[in-house]
Amino acid sequence: MPANVELTGSIARIILSGNLDFSTQEDFVRATDRVLSSDAAKEIQVDMSDVTFIDSSAIRALLNLQEMAREKGKSLSIWNCNEQIRDTFAIGGFDRMFILR
Image (tube, rainbow, N blue to C red; front, side):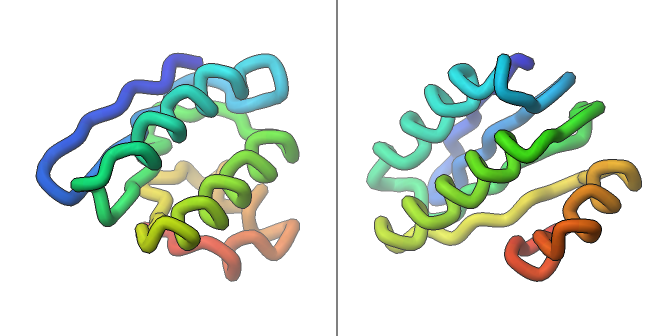
């Protein structure tokens, strides 16, 4: 799972693709470290346009990112989830914990 980061003004985008699971979380952690360390970034957008699968370890990583972002005064939103990913969030009630766009 490649995790690319784009920093534009006050917006930091983490662009994910492929499977988000335990085996790919190191790449995601590197991306989150980069956006969290950017003083200019006040809004973090996680783009899941090309994500095909997400498991509980990825949801836990997103929850951790949300907590760390809040501590640094940054907002977090998740963008472009396909129906399968939205269903996964909904089953666990995570659709009420994240801002999904």
